[in-house]
Length: 172
Image 1 (cartoon, rainbow, N blue to C red):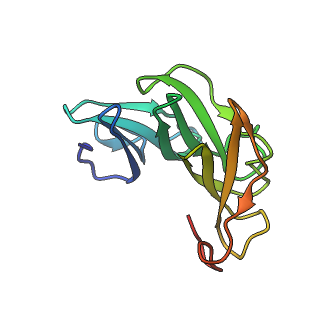
Image 2 (cartoon, rainbow, N blue to C red):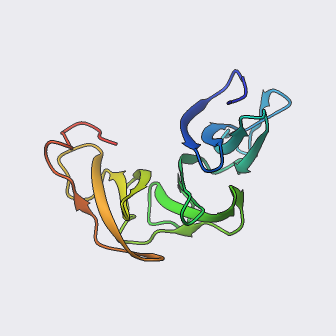
């Protein structure tokens, strides 16, 4: 399970294929928060196993990582971050893994998915990527969108899932 700590833990994703949990947590060392040179404590993504193992897999003291989603078929770990070279706000990225261990640099999903605003909460189901955004033409707040996966790194234009799924509030 997830190790006990006094600090931030959120948005767990359990991979039945790996029998491990990806989740967001505060950067710590020896039970204390760790800060960058500007006094920022960014969020990391950790991997916890049922055997009690734990490791940080995406960690940078100046960049926060959010919303891990592991796709077993491709062994990609999707996540959200606000890297400077992104499209603005938070963008959706992936890294290639080997059984959950990072094997590549982050890859931005591109302008059909990411916008000058914030994209969050990636989830793949039936060869489609679902995510939330606050910029595309929505009903208000964060809305849920769907993009078909057309090829390895090619996505269709995202469509809003409309009323009944989305509201004027945040939906993700």
